[in-house]
Length: 352
Ligand SMILES: [Zn+2]
Image (tube, rainbow, N blue to C red):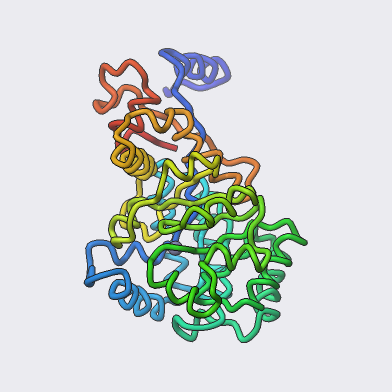
């Protein structure tokens, strides 16, 4: 006869408390994700960023709400098992697909902020709204449906000045996060200088897009003045080191960013890798290579970049914690589990 009853349940609960308490840490926050790009990993690498972008556009064109619903759920489950418990999906595939992404996140049990993208020109037709008013109507429809949203001008390539001004105004008025790609590639900067006589982050500043709820994604080639503008506005930078390496974007000027007190967060971006510890280690590795020192980042600062800073970037107040398996071989014999996580572990040591 199977054991049953209140006494058995109590004994079981007591048994489950035997042994050291689990090591819990805040869940990692993936502040910049394009889930559909996961399918491009290891495929058609192309000669440079712009060649990769052609493959990406082809893949984007083929997306449907049904595909997004199933494929994003699979990617979000991967994020979840790698220790990310919240994600900012930088979404430029249309409104029906936005709702499908929200459903996928619910299925995978990951907190999602939909960074709904404004796209005026370039790219492919499905990315584009006919006007900035039409875009803002989509944002408000999503909000009305209870979706957590952010305003996301895709880039200064995709949005002209009058769109940027309106988007900056709307985000400030409604206290929404504003995320935008900037300074990922030198060509983008040259084109912005030719069109506006300004570098991308200078243009964002002029258009009212910088503020404490703003996150600039990449900022790889930001110059000193652009970094000064980010610092003055209290804006953040989202670094996506594994993607930036894969696409040949370049190195974030980490020490110059830290020197100005600009907060950093991380994103898995193209999802060529899904591992928050690897993103943080890449970031730390860049800083070490650039400075010739090993102590540019404190361990707690790196872990905050992976978690709390991402939460602030997305306007989140809470997201689930995760468990560290301190009996995993990767952590065998280490004196400081938190330090060893970033220095030498993969996400295999993390679990929900
Ligand atoms: Zn991106």
